[in-house]
Length: 124
Image 1: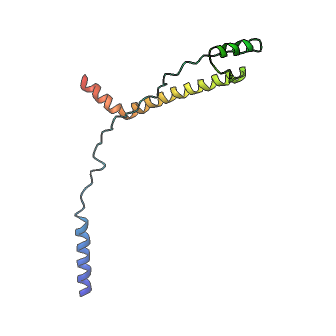
Image 2 (image 1 turned 45 degrees about the vertical axis):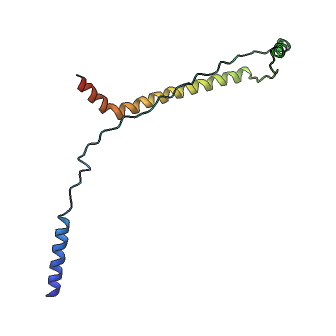
Image 3 (image 1 turned 90 degrees about the horizontal axis):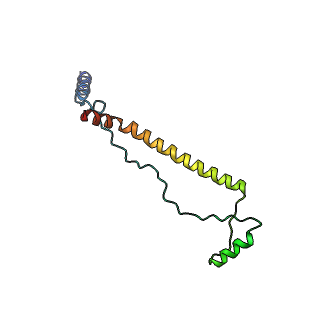
């Protein structure tokens, strides 16, 4: 008989313990999205370069002018094909910057669409 009373008491405790669990509001509570604070990437103001084109015919004249101006007659050169590659690299950088701007716009549109629509409805 003591086993029956222990089993009965354990059953009552288990059943009464489950009845005290509170309902969670996690799935019914709406959380507003916070606006994204992303700045679009901008190109800083670049320094202006002075290009000097040196050919086999004008090399002596260019070096003489550079010495007169107090500049060291040092030349960093590119072939015409390397200059084309440099131009392609800059075009790829510009294209990447444009993609980043579009991505940021899309992220803002996705995350802030509820906020923007809510603001537009309030204005009307």
